[in-house]
Image (cartoon, rainbow, N blue to C red; front, top):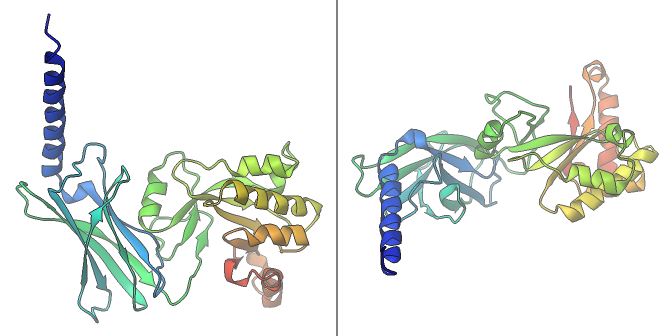
Amino acid sequence: MPGAGAIPTRLLLLTLLISGRAFQAASAATDADFSVGVEQALPVVGKPCRLWLTHDQAATASKTDGIAVTFRVTRGDHSAHPIDLAGAADQRQDVLASVQWTPRQTGPVRISASVTIRGSAAACIEVAPQDVFVTSRRLFFNYWQCPPEQRFVTSVMDNSATTEAAIRWKRRGVRPLGWQGGQWHWVRGYGSPEKMAKLWSNMPPERVGIVIDEFGGGDKIDQQLGAALRLTRQQMPQMFLAPYCLSVTGQQMIDGCRVADLVLVETYTPDWRWDGFITGRWQTAAKAGLGTKSIAVLG
């Protein structure tokens, strides 16, 4: 029977074996194993935007000083020299390195990264880039689902059964949102602000918030849903809340929409020919002081 000293020895050998396998996995990595992530699909001039690099096998990837990450920021019109930013180690499990970048000009920008692994046969791995567009102020492009080829997107409802699409959207700086009902759920057993807030607080995995489908035009139920929005915000301060509605009317509904991140004022294809009708609906949000966080939804 081994003595007491044999146990630490075996633990030491096991630790060395795991570390060796992790470094071997990192050394054998290719560009397909890494992905560039950006905080915002539409960064704003003068506002910090975080860049990061993930490894698709993060659980086994080595996070030692043997890995160096450099991010490169290149303007789409090549009017300026590329900017190289050294990535710093990141403590999150799925991220190898990150850096903060503050854009100075509007226009298209390509974010790429290179990975150098000491002891690897490949001197440097070039990672596929992400393309973003820098704007002068914050803009919203929200979609009730859309294909990944859609260029200008800031948030999208993602009801897919898996998390793969949501992860890809987040790497592009797009907010993937789950779906929850508004008046529909209220009349189906959730008839109190507390029950609605509990329902809305339940986000699907990898989503960063929800769209709420939907408020009406300010009736009594909408006033209660407004109270539910405020309660949800108290319970989930970082959650992205985007209610759909036909107008923003009534004090409780207005107060609720004020704590939302994006108010989606609906109109539909037959209404397009009446510009005043579309403007009238959105103007209810603007008059409530929500002009900078509301958009007219066309469908």
